[in-house]
Length: 286
Length: 286
Image (cartoon, rainbow over all chains, first blue to last red; front, side, top):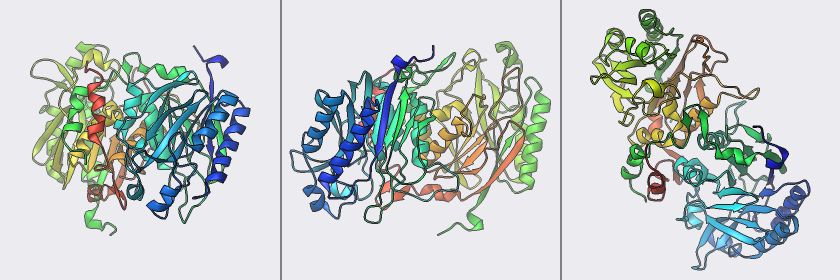
């Protein structure tokens, strides 16, 4: 049965251009873009990784000066907007933990406030000098009438990590990102998008990645925000080039409950986990 | 340091069009294509899944009539060619096990004979009515001066399975396939190729998939043979359309030993296997 309008959830990724250090301006940009998306009917709005602080910190001291608790000012602003429009907002902040250490964190905020705070478990490059990696699996929460999962940027490149929320029943995986731009062959889609397509198709779940725009201290970004269906096809994005844009797709999220891909195949029950044990046994965590 | 000619290994995928039931003609087609590839310098030649028997069996009795032991006539022909040209041949057969059951099997044959026989562990659709799934992990063997791993078609869509040979040190993953054709949006690459690109990039290993051509009993094929580098980019293929073709790429296979992707990142050591345990604990093998 094809989805009806009632089954469709409008998902938006607001690819803004934060500037490192400009907390107030960045928060305002995120709120402005999220509000605009809400006014056009988006029920779930995704913002980039580290959307309030910016990304390219000079050092840990600068990052610490831009950090806030999970229920700090950024979350408070999102909560007001979420209540006003009845939407769910997903996005990243630089989190100051109660223990004084920093986490690269993403929040889900809806009309009942901060629903979850997820700490990035796989850190990219110089993030390792600033952040403590999280140890908790990607959360899956009920919001906006769906089962929404959360991870951040480089996390997506570990298929074992993506599998966890799929097994836990997520229909939509939201991933705030800051994808640094890398060279690629002429005519090719960004490889990060290719991997996100595989993540969606392999698990038959929707994936919404919100990347950022705007060069920062010599780092350019892919600008590859994309919303992908359970077959692995982009419904919206990636828009060519690195610029501010909001991409929007109407997603039949309940379709992600159906993992069948042929008369006799199902991408989750076809797994043979007892044979995969080598993956966890063969090497050690570091 | 860029690779020199000495570091390059020519890999060929011979996308032939087997016809179900025509064992002699199919074996001859595989040998002919492999020989032609060897004569142009290929050191590793990959043939499709079930290359000798064809794929769309009417029933298990027909499959059984087309089955052979792992060291049967198909392997014997490949071994002669492998010795003659000093090449390694990878391809699929319908295997009759010593216990009388059937396996969807791929072989690696080089100048010392049959090096390994791998039985497909993840069966596609009606294969479940014919074949017994294998229980052994993808083998990794030293041949043609490299570490070559082997799996078959749908196996590739289980990232946990692809991870095993990467962790075991494979530089090139060869995957004989019979990819049934599915609809896809205009301008999109086949999703099977997208997933193979992700498999390569996620593990920084070369991936060579040899698909088949030629409609068989109403089933069309992607014809998506592709050779992919550790960044995830196709070096050769997929050639549009479903037809017989040999694709060739000169691959700097030792580059797959280097898993670094930034000053501080390595796709294998960045894994956090102690956190992935949920994947094997949460559900049961069936």
